[in-house]
Length: 166
Image (cartoon, rainbow, N blue to C red):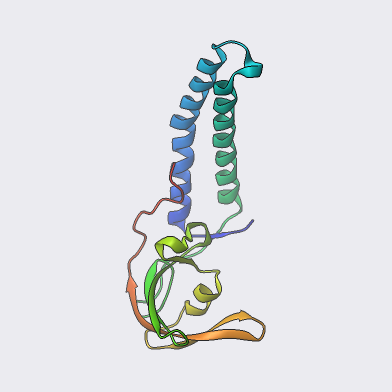
């Protein structure tokens, strides 16, 4: 896997693991016990649903632990005038004559609906390390891409967004 994660991402993942182990696991086991008590397991929908929830929780715990184990920690520190992780960037798209605002985050936190773009996406990769006013080429494929201009950079930091909601 070897995803690039910040220390903050890892801390959030550890919090989620702890929550899943201490709270969700206990609730899931209780739900399985309760459903099992209803009788015939072959036709017991509640039992099968409770087992599925329990297994999904255990799978998520294993996934997060593997992500932490194989992660490459990257710094979210950048110069004040350069685009870095956890910075909010206002970008002008020349071809569309539009301005958009994005927050540059690690891959695991990328969410285009919230305006979070991954540092490994073509746009994220192109913006990293550049300054306000720079005209940057965003390479999509070997022979294609487009230009954007960085209008402003705000160091918004890590505002505590969850890796995933429980």
